[in-house]
Structure formats: C-alpha cells, structure tokens
Length: 191
Image 1 (cartoon, rainbow, N blue to C red):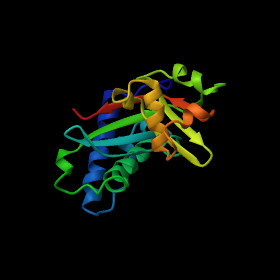
Image 2 (image 1 turned 90 degrees about the vertical axis):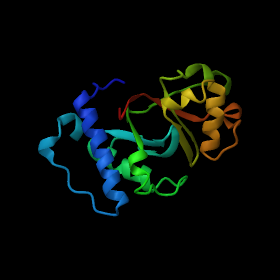
Image 3 (image 1 turned 30 degrees about the horizontal axis):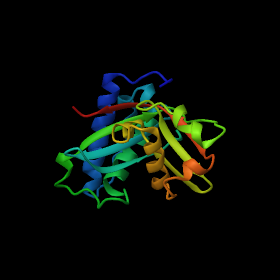
Image 4 (image 1 turned 180 degrees about the vertical axis):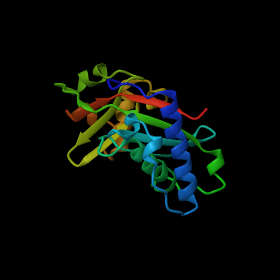
C-alpha cells in the first residue's frame, strides 16, 4: 500500500472502536461521539475501509467503501455496524453472537484503473494475494478484497466469481473488456 502504514496502537484503537460500535449498535443504542483527543492524525485523515466479521472462520458480514470520503475512524465504525446489522446476506448479529465475532479491518489504497486491450490478457495482469479487484459493467459493479485470493487462487476463477457477485454471467469477463480497477489493503484483525 502506498500510504504510510498505521501503528500497532492505531490498529488496536480501530479494532477496539469497531467492537464497541457493534456492541452498542446490537443493543440498539446510539453510538457516542468520538473523542478527538484520543485520535491520531492518521485516524482522522480521510480513509476507506472494509470491516469483515467472522465466527469460527465463517463469514458473518462484510461491508466497506472503495473511496475515502470521511475520516478513517468514522468509516471503520460505520462499516462495523453495517457489517453486523445491515449485510443483506445475513440476519443481523445478535447480542449472543457479539462475543464470538472476529473482526478484521482492511484499509484500502485508492483504486486505480487497470487498462487492458482484450479479455484473454486480464488474468495475467492481476497479482494474486496483492490486488483487490473492482469490476464494472454499465450499472453493475463488485469487488473482492485481496484476501479472497486465499479461497480463489486462480485468476480466471477469481474473475468468474467476481462477475457472478456483480450479478453477471460468470464468463462475462471472457467475452468483453470490462472496467477494472485494482487496490491494495493494509489488513489487521483482533488477536
């Protein structure tokens, strides 16, 4: 990732705030305002992040943003709550599940376009385990974080699943040139 990395203390602060946000939101209480004196410049700078929740290694929610439009700390807290309560793929997290949640935060670099001339060259341009990928075709779009390469290590398979995630046929990437962007992440999780 091109931006300077977060310190261990900043990572811990974001993970603690993400967990606190989930605990409060699951109880249907309003999140308290953040205390600016407890936040470093890196946490208050504009940032984009995804928050992934798992229980026993199984996905329980994942929501984030690709573009930085608010302070990183606010982005993380909002997405932690959204991943717990508003991921359409899952029922909202219950208070009984909160202690079981494992929280992972992925801080994103700014996505950059990946120009290419024909579908057959696209898989060779991707860097497994490094690049997050955004596919767009008209009004459809989807992304996979770099961590998804662990489950889908072959670029062709990765692209096919990403096409399906955006609601298109799995082979769409083989039939036409799509809008493709890549980004990298600084990923960290609770111990």
